[in-house]
Length: 145
Image (tube, rainbow, N blue to C red; front, side, top):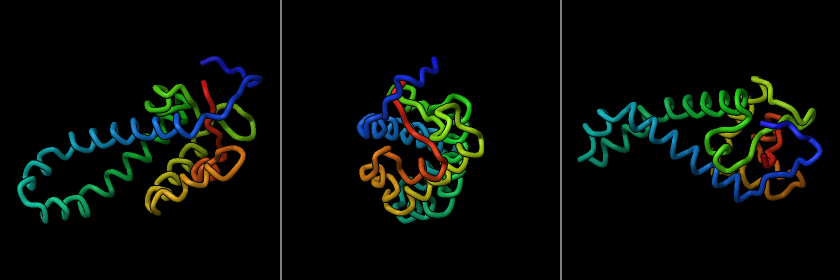
């Protein structure tokens, strides 16, 4: 990716939402593939399915989301969804590449945003930098490529 900081433009909430949907679908597919046998075993029993989702799938899903978000934002500057949406994550202070630690903090902040009814995502509608809770936590901005 070319790093031209003179023409940085904040990503729209629409493109960020589009990237979010792609990323969540991708992570969901990965979890379904990993746990396919378990899902198939309880597919006829809704109570068993709910129990599986509450007990066996929650922690692996959280861990996978943190690994996915941390790695892709740190290594590529964008997740698969962000690459498709033509947006990327940059450090809010240097406007450069995001450090591994900032990427990890951002990923954890994103999990907290999801856990608390996505309120952390709504924060992005009410500040100048369109920064969500996880952007603030990781000290990042999301910009167009």
